[in-house]
Image (cartoon, rainbow, N blue to C red; front, side, top):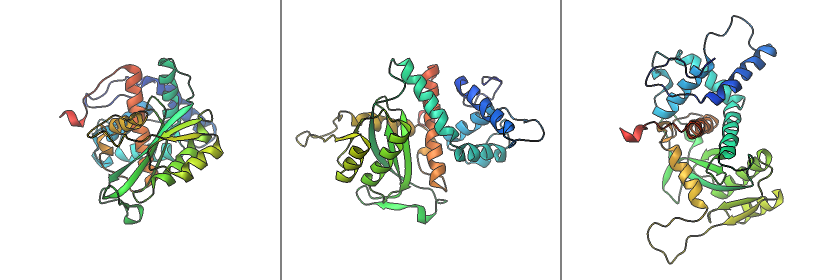
Length: 278
């Protein structure tokens, strides 16, 4: 199976490094008896291309171009891969490849935490939303943990009313479980005593970086700018310009997919115009 097979000019391109992982997933399902029947008719790389296309352009699933597989099939794979944690696994695989290419250890030892409040679409249930009183935003909040290159380590999507402190505790637990070598974390002042104490219990030194009150206007804050840049990268994917997902766990999957796209392009040194270039 070749990920660079014939495709529409408008299609995004699945990184070729993912092809073995996707093939292994299909082989594992077949070996466990979960995929018995006629041979699969869809190339998994083309399915991933379609998922990346939705993430990049922001279109509804039903509006997928007809040169992809039927939208019901694509969404079915998306839901299955989200449920089985495939997107998180692929993100971890690509992150390790990028870190190795940058001359870093494959596993990080430090991270940066932050959160972004975002408005939601009309299909998001009111019970899954909240109000960020500080930013006056009704919607959801994306809690992110990234390494020092800005690559995703952990994500948690909640109602916007959930505090950064609560989100930080959850992220630190995720990062400690999946990246046990992390011993340092930088945050802003929204992460207070409880998050710092929780990090200490996990063996992670949580340090808050503050803005110099004597400086007016825009100023790059050491360490924190890394995660702010990651939020900027994510916003190049139109599906993330607003939270369109009915369920928060699907919103987390969309963020993983955007990072897969970003890291894949970084590995292949490919540049593609995004929705802001039009």
